[in-house]
Image (cartoon, rainbow, N blue to C red; front, side, top):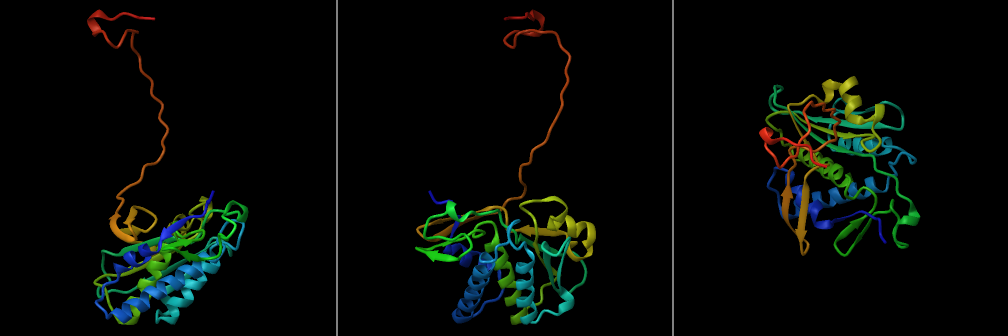
Length: 251
């Protein structure tokens, strides 16, 4: 039984339409290839708790952004410790005022044992086969991190300036949580870097395809979470089938 996670190869290209510009087919193909290259690079970084952590992935994205023209003052690799750093980058808009949009994904992945995977698959080797990508993080959520990174690079290289600032945050320790959790740590220590009125998180919603063609991208406005309640009531015993005036206790 395969425990490998797989995502449709077409999904990467479908979500890449987030980019604004109308470009030639050749340019579009170039940026799709860029997204795939970043995707492969991130999947093959073992950013698990027992692996190298998220820092190498954050540093890899930072190098790409700086090479694309982002000033070093707008690209930050910071975190609670050396293994669990986050990537935060800003694309400045025409106005410094609100509203600011934060685009979010996480770089860490859950553990993956080689013996749990199909004999011809390694969880930390990127494989494309029959229209699917295989590897730890292909669904959760290095595809989202790759798409956001590729679009930030595209916007910078094409000279697009949004109306308001856009922030990219690729975080650590979403899977484990605790003090190193990227969003929590950034809010407590560098809120000014990610403070925004709106946030789009790629680790939410759903994507559906049929015959290799996408037909649905669902957006999630909220998620359920657990809660504990204690309820105390006082009432005389009776049976639910009887009205209060004919209350009885039935065995």
